[in-house]
Image (cartoon, rainbow, N blue to C red; front, side, top):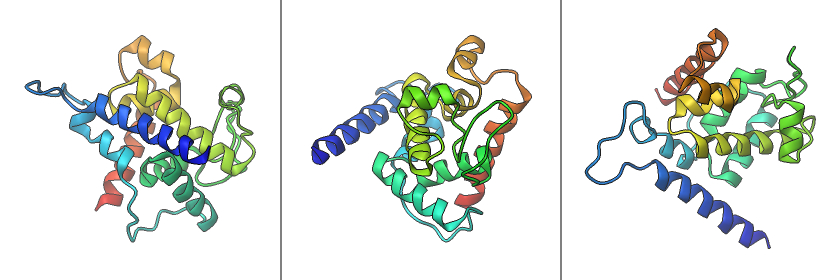
Length: 180
C-alpha cells in the first residue's frame, strides 16, 4: 500500500512537471512555469549550507515532508518563514493556524489537524501542489496560497492586494538569497 501511494505521488508530480514544460516549437509565455523554473522547484531536494532561520525541529519536518511530496524544501521553508516565522503555534488575526497558516476550512478539506505540526506541513504542501495544478506560474501559485485561488482567477494573476504582492515578492527574494 505504501509503495502504491509513493508511486501515485511520483506520477502526480510527474504530471505536474510535464504540464509545465513548454510544448516543442512554442516559447513559454512571460512568467510561465517553464521560464521561472517552478518545475525544478518541485524536483529540487538538495541540502545547502544555508541558515534558514527556522528551529531545527521545524527544518527537519520540512525536509521530511518535502521529500515525501517531491517538493523543494527551500520553497516550503520560504513559505513557512513568510507565513509563521517558523512558529508552530502561530495563529493569524484571520484565524489561520500553524507553520503553514492553514485556514480551518482548508485544513478540514485537506483532512488534517492544523494544530499538529506534521499534519499542518503535510496539508500545506498538498494545498500548494493543488494550486500548482490550477496555475501556471510560481507567482500565481504563491498568490493563490496567500489570497485564495478565486482572487487570482478573478484578477488574472496576482491580485492588487498589497499583502499578497509583498508576500510573493518576499518568498521569491528569500529563494534568490538562498540560492546565492
